[in-house]
Length: 360
Image (cartoon, rainbow, N blue to C red; front, side):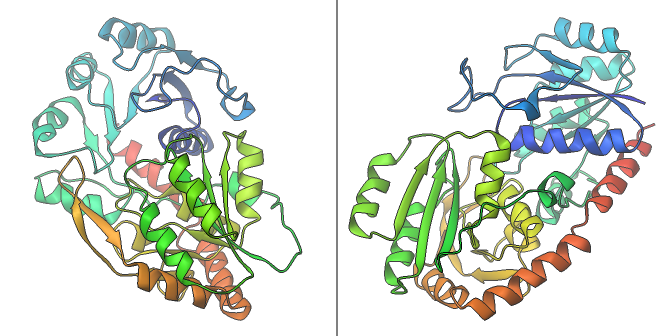
């Protein structure tokens, strides 16, 4: 089949998922085409992005727009003889419904922090299938009357092939994947927890792509010399090598659409700490590949799902536990077992094959 994927196409979670989905579809023998749209977040519209060869792929049509006109969709579908259009968190229901009426099959997913009851009717009209990448969103869709097939998200071969930039200096580096430093990152709780620890081998590395909250982070680094701030938008190979070279993924969060850093940690054989809430506790299994900590209700995300505040005391205890070399080694082995088993990429490829078969 000829499959079109509508997505952002620059360093962002959505684009990474779409790039990996593309490789899964091509592994299944499908021809794929990308319609690259702009986002609406803090990095949308940036012209001078860091050059990165992973995005330099054939079959990519750039639109330069976040709301793509129906005429553009139709021209793209026609020019590439597309049979199925796949989308990620795209709310242009009128345009998708028109493509569906034209005879194109439409398959989409959403991040649950955005998708709410108000979107159900539009999604029903626009999409043949709304699928899920974690059980939490699948259960939520069921409550909304949407039957959503589940596709296992696994560890892409690109991640398993990463050469980690390790340093043999005896330090224990906890990597906080700060990304765009948005509201879902509980930086206050993480900083409070880390400052409760006393092990001088520990280092807290907060790595982000934008300078948001840089002032707060600089103050924390001044207060504790073990805290390091790295704000740099790196090419994918450099970024992944640095991340893989750290010892622990410290990624508690208020919510997650999927939680890509936790899957990266599994691929790297890297222990992780996060809070015991969906979907984070689907990727991190207590005492298998990491530790789960309690969290209290902080509020809600835009869609009404719960926003969590991880417990700083429990976080501090988990950090102290994972500083032990033996404990960390056991958890790393657990991550590698998950990588080869429940989170094997072959399961993801199989899931997408079944998903496409259901609409054709």
